[in-house]
Length: 537
Image (cartoon, rainbow, N blue to C red; front, top):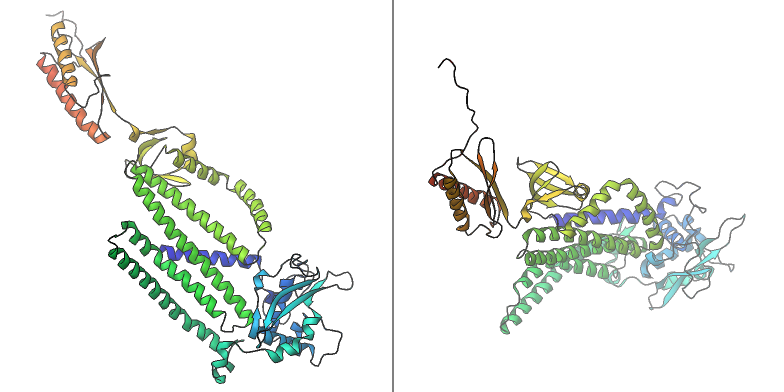
């Protein structure tokens, strides 16, 4: 469910990004609904300053039935025409709806147009009309200068306009529409033939069912072949297939639905919207597929590392998974913007300026992020470590890109910014390879030298016989004649795995120490003071 939610969020973000870079031309055309742009934002109110703006403006106006507005996008030929300007716009739209071939997203968005298409600088080929005879007639725009010093505008070239009557007469119906009853093809749903959305909806479950059937048959055949060969294959292969079969089916369904849907005869404007929807869904499915694959790879790496260091495995899994998902999302958004015709050089330059401003505004956040990367890469702290950071002592539960989550001894949760980790002294108790047992024992002053020697020998023998005591560094010495006691220091390292085991073994050693002192015939001292004699006695 979380994966579906993230994919949906991605679709919304990408759609918003595309909308920010590409405002609909419909909102700029007089007579159509939508807010009009300020007069100072563009030189031409009909957005004919770029080839794509001119094409989308014509398509939007003609599809809405505003033939008079659509006619403003035509360069009228000098030779007399048998039809009016409005009728020419309507007929051209009819021919395009029944046989347009081209990618509107690839039409140039710059005022100069594409200069590397092999045409003169003032010409731009934006697509073609496929006639019933399979002849392809190109739709060409031309750059027309304006009077009064206004910038040139792009119009449908006069030679294309002169050919409109023939295009209209020889236009053929889409293949599917030819076999449908006329009552079905004449029914309209808004400006769209009603059978088109019905066909698209009917195709969706059919294509999905066929895709799942093919994938299921392929998996079944692969298993049968493997069994016949006597090889079951690695155990992770079945898990990998179960993880990616859903996003794979989604990707194939979207791709095939788009390929088949474009052949049923969708009008140009709705085809433009359909292609955008298919592109966004395909990119979302691709992100879903990659995230599933990355989760599998990260899980296998974590499983491999857990054999040597479980905490390191968890930290590497968290950092790697998040970084890969963020990188995948960023690359997919850039690819999506490029697919929608956005100039990435301008976009990346804008992102660079915006990133610089964001870096100043979020300096502390970025400091924490880079410090988190440093902490995770250096592995100074990993999940499960027991450490002290500043005044807090507890167990590390999570090391993220911004903060570290610490569970204190009081069972509270403290979020420590990674920037604090990079500048503070961190004491990691979990990295101890041995535990220090150091204590000072005070013996009574009435202890004789022989008793003291016996006590020291017994304590040394106690430590020497303990297999968990490091013998090279162990020592038991009389170190001080204190005011109230004879101080004996016991110093030893215990080679135990963790702190609870250290406490348990320290208890055993201290009990043995008490027995050794008692067996030597002496005891522990305590502060005492001799009172002066009473003169009355």
